[in-house]
Length: 188
Image (cartoon, rainbow, N blue to C red; front, side):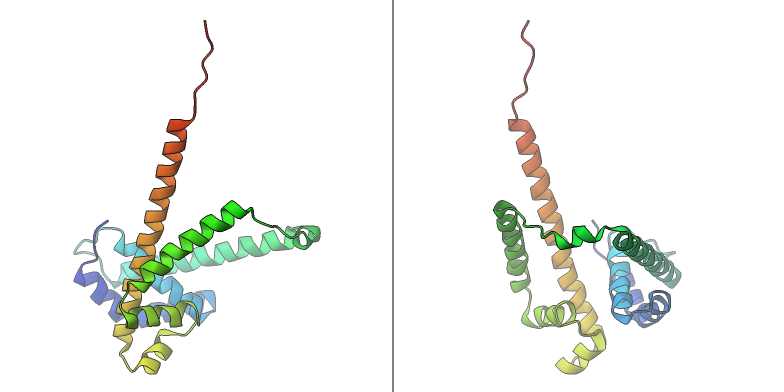
């Protein structure tokens, strides 16, 4: 994965407000629009950019992600409408091993977030846990909107790295399991 060049960060910072407005018109929700704008940055961050890439790439990517969001929302609503009512009444209790594994994974994420600078962690939690907008966070902390965006990008990269690390660990565990599983062969 390549790191974003200053051109992507600069371009995103300059176009962010317009991206959020455009996506908000599509999805009808400001918080979803902000999330999709952030996802746009992360999606482009994961691919190498050329010098020919412009703000149009940001807007087209955000537009496509907004449409994906609407499609996923429609699928969820259709599923909920078609789901039998009895299924909602049956409580599902996860097994203790799965609960312990999930708690262990979340603890690892919390430890990585604890390693972030205090202001970055505070901005991340205000946005993702308390649901505050970037503008409200900037005003509350007395920093610029650009600072909030940069700190959120750092926190989101931390989360992305945690997710990739977790996926790699699961893949390695599965490979170890497959390597240790006895293979039975028919004897002649």
